[in-house]
Length: 129
Image 1 (cartoon, rainbow, N blue to C red):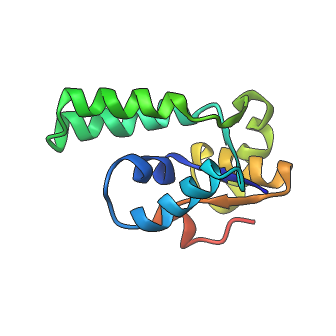
Image 2: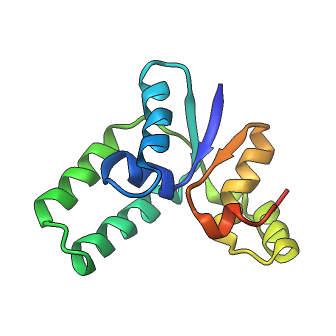
């Protein structure tokens, strides 16, 4: 089974936050080979940005931040170039008044015909597709 995950889920695998237990169930299923993870290639920049914010503004140590980045790189996520998703993501963003960044994930889930999982409450509270 394939699912599209965004950075809000991935970060919860590595940092304890609300919804970490639910996110870690996804990681566990991935590690058991039950799930194939997919994401736009933008996910690397997004995870890096979240870790940067946690380091600079929330007291995460530099060593912990680097460990999270290193651990994230070990995951095998099937990446899709954002360029191939941009047209659909833009149309979705205009239609649903959400960012193109977020709609890249939705566009990928529609293109791949699989579920999209996010812990971004603002995004998931609005039905996009």
